[in-house]
Image 1 (cartoon, rainbow, N blue to C red):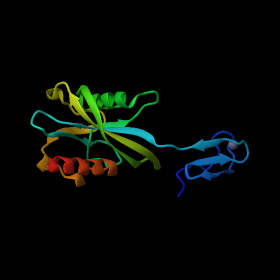
Image 2: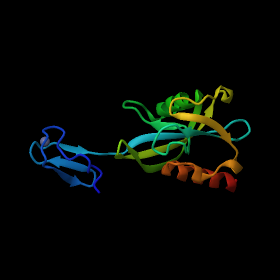
Image 3: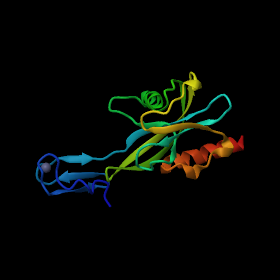
Image 4: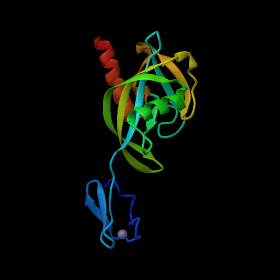
Amino acid sequence: MHVLDKFRFCPVCGSKRFIENNEKSKHCEDCGFTYYLNPSAAVAAFIHNSKGELLVVRRKKDPARGTLDLPGGFTDIGETIEETVRREVMEETRLTVSHLTLVDSIPNRYVYSGFCVPTLDFFFACEVEDTTLLQANDDADEALWLSLDQLQAEDFGLESIRKAVERYIKRKKEK
Ligand SMILES: [Zn+2]
């Protein structure tokens, strides 16, 4: 199925002749408008406390409501990827990121409102100022610290997050 299958009419002139141009775009044969769908940028954070436990949150909303997740979310228009990390971590956990390093990136598909949004998820190792200020907020139903032994990749509902957690567990166990 084409990524723009749900876009049946030209959004400029309303023509039905809004046809597949290539794998990621559609073109209007009446007014000439062409629309490309590129991945949306999203972030997720690996944050530890002084005991080396990993911070995870429980998803309040669909998709994958009730499953575990890493703090994170979508980049807003005009925002840098670093600003996204700092904002999302603050919104979901009330923690202030003091330092961040890119550790992984994984393409994903995120179904929202019946539409499959292609994403590119960036994973950052983050240091935070004071972990005792932790408080679940916004899209996070609860926030908890898990030791490496308690971490199970299959508890994470979103595919790219599950894959990143699997890679994280593997890296930690190799050390
Ligand atoms: Zn048109």
